[in-house]
Image (cartoon, rainbow, N blue to C red; front, top):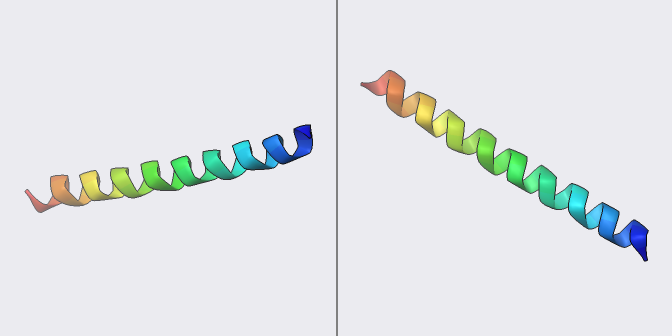
Length: 34
């Protein structure tokens, strides 16, 4: 059923966005620490 896949895609995208945000926060922190 397409609805299931849509939900799954959205959740995966959300996970990826959160991971990217965390990654950039770490990058910024390391950059500021220098």
